[in-house]
Amino acid sequence: MVRKQWKFVSVLLVVMLSSIAILSGCTKSDSGNTNANANSNANTNAAGSNGAGADENAGSADAGSGEKIKLRLTGWGAPDEVAAYKFAIEKFEKAHPNINVEFQAISADYDTKLTTMVAGNDEPDVAMMESATIAYPLAEQGKFVNLQDYLSADTEVTPDALVPNITYSAEPGNVIGIGPGPETFVLYYNEDVFKAAGIEPPPADPAQAWKWDQFVDVAKRLTIDNKGRNATEEGFDPKSIKQFGINLPTWWGVYSNFIYSNGGDFLSADGKTLALNQPEAVEALQKMADLINVYHVAPSPLQSKNIPGTNVALQTKKVAMAFDGQWATASLAQSKFNYNVAPMPVLKQPVTTIVAGMFSIFKSTKHPQESWELLKALIDPDASLDVITAGTWMPSHKDWYTDADKLAKWTQNLPSRPSGYKGAVIDMLLNHSHATPTSYVKNFNKIMDVINPAMDKVWLGKQSAKEALDAVAAKAQEQVQGRRDVK
Image (cartoon, rainbow, N blue to C red; front, side):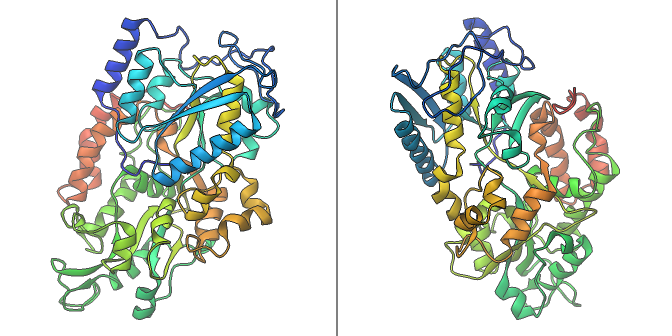
């Protein structure tokens, strides 16, 4: 459910959204930090799910009363993801015969089209959101129902029932969205390449995960030039490489793992100060850049243009290892070669960043209780089992990881679940995961608009991480507005 190409909300989009909303008079007086008022008169639907009350101004019909109700849902996704949503909707409508769900799958320009809907007072009841783009600008306008009220009262979907780091909050106690499932980051590798080189593959157990120096040593030995010499041998030619040791995506989703592993963060604990220029973050980023510019075990930004996606790059031995999201198992499962997974290399502690889309309920809905029931159906692992077993998604509910029978449904005897999966993915998720910075760093995109050009110089080897980040720290600090996880 994560959009692979992360597009960021431009200043124009946010300004346009705010301006049009004000001009049209559609913006509510509620701020993004105002919790939805519980409505003691909200009714439980026919399924009897014990949901909480919704905003009393929105109202809610009793799903068991026979009143015909129509809900609108918007979302995006690959064909298999859209099919999963449709299947969830079909199950939901069978359980709630008086409710019809209109699903609008928006394949392109999702944020722009949803912005237009909001500006025209034509909001859906439930919508899929991206935390890195449109969700928080809308939350700051008070557009979403506070799902904490529902989570607190529901007996099926509670905070403890969900896996870590898939709920998104505008502030503590004000949940604006819940993800249909988490995505972790892992180290993928070609087993045959390791076997041919006589190198022991990385352990799947997080407690035994490679330290950074171990990883670098192996990456050197698996980086081969066109004359067959590896990066540890005399005469190795870094300008003529046949096989890189590691493929290195340089976006924040990947490098956040190493910043967190090294004890760093994007902001200080109180949210007042930029932390990307602090020693822990700088060291992690420099170590990544050294893979390109010092050890020559990862392709440069220019060389990366000739490196295909993870599945093809590993299969064709363009790279021996690759950092990527859990979602890559879907394409790897279709490839005809022996691959496996391991935890990301460790600096100080094993960590994986969790990223996910989310479903949110608009306050303008006339049926908040029924919208909550629909949201629950959309994040139900049973409804999306096909896309989970294919490798694209992971379950949102914790018992699908801890109950042996449920775990077996989506992990056993599947090409999308190699032998290292339980340690590298499941153990890391449950015990070593960290929230995505987009969920708690206010004004994240504006900060990264300053940071990204500076980091480009680091990846190109034109400046050290310290030089580049120190140079833009003051400008980035101007964009710091605090943390959403701190009151």
